[in-house]
Amino acid sequence: MSERFRESDRVRTSTVDPDHHTRLPNYARGRVGTVVGGDGVHPLADLRAQGVERPQPVYLVRFTARELFGHGDHTVTLSLWEDYLSDE
Image (cartoon, rainbow, N blue to C red; front, side):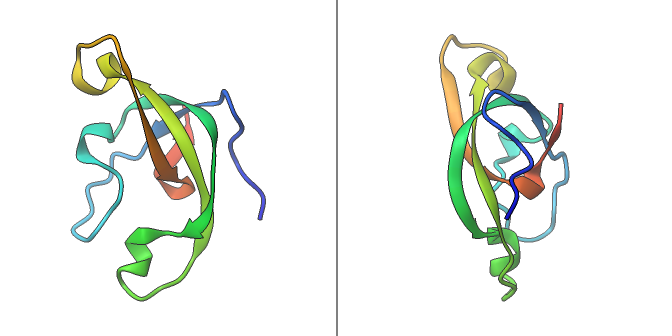
């Protein structure tokens, strides 16, 4: 399986607010972060909750606290499925 993003790529998270289970936190939607590594290939949790197995790359994406919360000098790293991400 080919990975779309590489370490140091800037990515933007999806803004979609589905009416079903998702592992993309609301506070991270539409935000810009940096890929800092890979976190394996796993079934997309959103679909798995519906009984569909569709593995895809998961990325470690680092965000500044300022990007996520509007203030703070720390960072937050999230494991995010490829479907949640687009080029910045």
